[in-house]
Image (tube, rainbow, N blue to C red; front, side, top):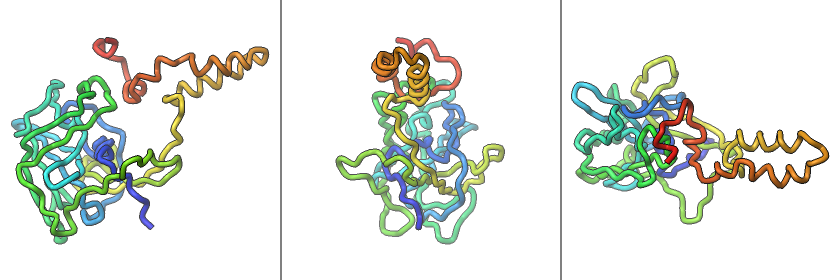
Length: 253
């Protein structure tokens, strides 16, 4: 039985972000790589997003949320200089199983993007913001009359985060192997949800446990104080906490 997909708008993405997608021009390479090729009927909400900038360009994945809107990763709509690209540089292809070859069962629908609305909490590619999501408005509605193009099934009100160890699935266009260029296929990757740490950051949690085990005569004091030791991290985004490399000056403000 196929594992259930986390069919939220953010999955398109978290991708990586775009999940299973090549990084946008203004963002470093993502870490979601792998999966196996599928036909688009297995994930009819998945779209291929092309970002054109003169002689260069990049691509990302996205998810259809309704006939005229697609969600993707915000870093995909930024250029190498860290500024947003115009909507006219964006075009989506829906109903395809491969961006590089024609599959007989595909039912391609191409649309231009007329506007981009980025999450107000997103600080740009260099900020490592967790709010890495925009909504794209298409120039014409998509046709949902077939099985190759359909909106993603969003969770209902009050739906919580998937339980720890739940199987989840990601669909997107990207690399199956980090050392090999993407073939253009639409891929499916099965993963498992990690246990969510109440302290927000696994490194902090392990540090707290180490503190509590150091001095047997002060266990109670450490037990109470350890969760407060790194309380400043509570309001810091996961993306910033886990960012590799040095932080840029503007994130300290």
